[in-house]
Amino acid sequence: MTGRCGFRGDVVLVFPPLEEDAFMGMPPLGAVVLATHLESRGYRTRIVDLALVCRSGLAGGVVPSASNLPDLFGHHLSGAPAPGRSADLDLLVARIGARPGDLVGFSVFSPLQYASAVALAREVKRRTPGAIVVFGGAHITTWGHLYYPAEEAIDFAILGPGERPIETLLAHLAGERGLDPDDVLDPVVVPLGPVPGEITPDDPQTVSRARLFLSRLSRFGTAILSRRDGRIRVTNSGPPLSLEEQACPRFDILDLEPYRVGIGDDTGVILAYQAGRGCARRCTFCMHHLQGHVESRSADRIRADLVEIERTTPARHLFFADSAINDSLRSVLAALEGDGAPAFAWGSFARLAGLSVENVRRMRSAGCRFVVAGVESGSEGILARIGKATDLSAAQRTLAACRESAIAVVATFIAGYPGETEADVEATERFLERAGRHFHAAGVNRLRVDPGTALHLQPGSHGIAKIESRLTAYGRGLPVYPYEALPVAGWIDPQASLDRVRRAIEAYVGRNAALPPAAGCGRTFGEYFAAGEAIHSP
Image (cartoon, rainbow, N blue to C red):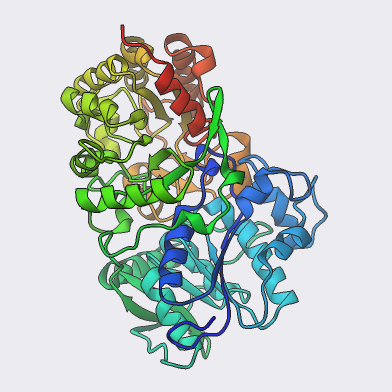
């Protein structure tokens, strides 16, 4: 099939292997949205979900996890002997099935995906030199674009939501237009270790380039990176499509049966849907605000989309993949209430203190079964340092309302934030003692310093003296980028904080309710749906 600009190859959208997490029971929403858009423009598109392939035990019998993902692919990059069992590149590249002239797009969501994506991209280029490899996704937008100059296997990189830049790129590949640069930059070549990402993220030149790209992106909205004459060319591809402009995601282009998961005594397919985008908060450890301004789909649009998804798929469970449902809640409730509303059970992220008791009750009536809440700390002082000022008394009232309304709450906490003191940890322990009975599950992890966040780009102003960059450290229950705090008297040791909060969770939420280290959002969303059904109002 030929798209409207004359591009004659296939567009192959690859979701690389990713560490096991609750999200991984669902089809990759970003790839489905992009494929829906491209097919509506006449391009032949395939989605290859290699996270699903690996989770099914088909990649050499190894399932990626936070503890083994870098090792599974790192030796393919370094040439060193594999430290243990490795992923089967032959099988994974065969699944991609690239042909000369195809555009193979890798969606790199997480820093931990980068090693697998590069290993696969190199092998695709080696076997099929005529394939065009494009990297995009959240990690490429916020930090991974800095690797682009050093990685010859990547032909182009896309920054921001992909619909407009990939159409611009396809028109260029078909000879319909050039990629006239809006900026031409001398590359900062970020050195790669045996596992890509082993860099010094606080190197002034590298951090300066990251800030430059992010400032350009905020002005353009989306961009394409290309190379010429040893320099990096940045082409403005315009503002991203608004959520109202996006087509309803066509999940029926996938075989959904392999995504079926256990939900209590039954099974079901869980799909992600985005009612809103962006985040008004500016939490120092988070990148969600980099998605741009906060926007929500209208109630009419949400209802129409969900009616269509209900008609065309077997799914009856949804996860609203917004940064927090609070910003879109009015539209979501209006879409799911009243005659003719689609009948989905659903879950979401939420800010507890921003939900009224009345809204919690309406959420349950409209199908909500669980929320995942980043509580982070029981100390309002630490929450203020994070940039997440919260009224914990209001959060506790919301928790009680969720319990009474039979909505399961999964909470995550952070240990070792720079500036945390003995008093802050005691405040978290007291909060868990008061509120722990209202949680279905809770977990705590050491602070994770992700590339592109405020903690990463301005470490000194947040009390961080040094950041190491060792992806493999995450497998030992440490952050992706372990940090060394400034030596300030009174700050508590991060490991001591972690141990104490974990013990408090086990004591006040329950030993079986404590999530394991590095568990992300926890076990499976199927478990959380079942938990919401099982809760009985007192």
